[in-house]
Length: 377
Image (cartoon, rainbow, N blue to C red):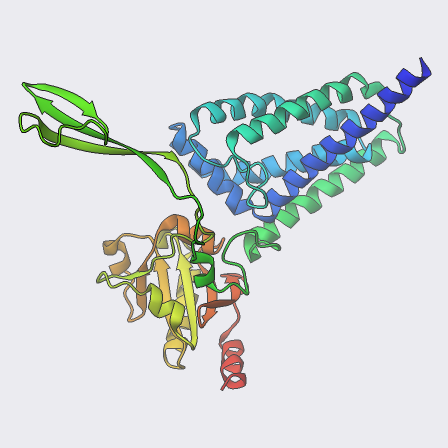
C-alpha cells in the first residue's frame, strides 16, 4: 500500500513538473514574439474563413501566452495551484480537439504552439496534447494533495504581480523586437549562406495529372499512361499536387525587385558597403510618423554613402503615393514578416551579413550611423 502511495506521489510530482514547464515554456516563447503569434492567429482565421476576427489577432496572442504562462507557473510553483489546474483544463479542452482538426485538415503546416522556437507538425502537436491530457488526469485526481505556503490574499497578490510583469514583458518585445530572435534573419547571419541547398537532400515530390478530352469526355492520366501518341485525345489541362515536401533552406524566399521589375537581390547581398533595409509589410498599416522618420533617415543615408531600400508588399499604386526619391522595392509579405517583427523595422547589412536589427521604436539616430561610417573608413 505504501509503495502504491509512493508511486502515485512520484507520478503526481512528475505530472506537475512536466505540465508546468511545458505551459510556462509555451507562454514565454510566444511572449518573446507576440507579433509572430498574432500572425499565426491570422493564418488560422484565414484558413477557417474567419477573417472578420483578424483585428483581434494580437490581443488574442497576448491573452493566450499570458494564460498559458500563468497556468503553468501556478501549477509549477503551487501558488493558487487549483486555479492553475483549472486554467490548464480549459486550455487543453479547447486546443486538444482543435489540434486534432488541424492534424486532419492541415490548413497550416505548423500550429505555432511553441512559437518559432520549436516547430512541430500538426500530428506531433496533437500527440503532445494527448500526453498532456493523461498527465493532467493524474494532476487533477490528486489536486487535493497539494500544500499551501501562503495565505489566499498573498498568493493572489503574487500571481497578479507575475501576470502584470509578464504582459509588460510581452509588450516590450512587441515594441522593441523579440529579446531572443528565433527567426532565420538573425544578427550575424550571412543571408546567402542560409539560402544554400546542400547536395543529396530530399526535394519536393509532386504528382502530376494530365487531363485529356475525347468525344466530349474528359479523363485523367498520369505520366505513365497519358495518350502521347494518340491524336484522338486532346490535351485540356495539367495539375501538379505536392505529395511530399523536400528540404527547404532557412531562407528560401528572399527576392527583392524594384518597381520596374529589376531583381535587386544579388546587388543587395554582394554589396560590400553598408545597406539599410527599411521594412514595411504594408505601408498603410504603419504609423505615418514612423514612416516619416524612416524617410528622413533614408535621405540622410542617400547623401552619406549608405544604400537605402524600402521593402514592402504594398501594391504599386499605393507605393507611388509615397514616392519621394527613395528606392522603394517589392518583396513577399511573408518574407517581410519573417525578416523583422516591426512595421516599419530596419536591418543593417554589409557584404550580405546582417549587422543589426531594430524596430521603429529603437532604430539608432543619424549620429550613430555617422559614427559607424567614420569608424569603418
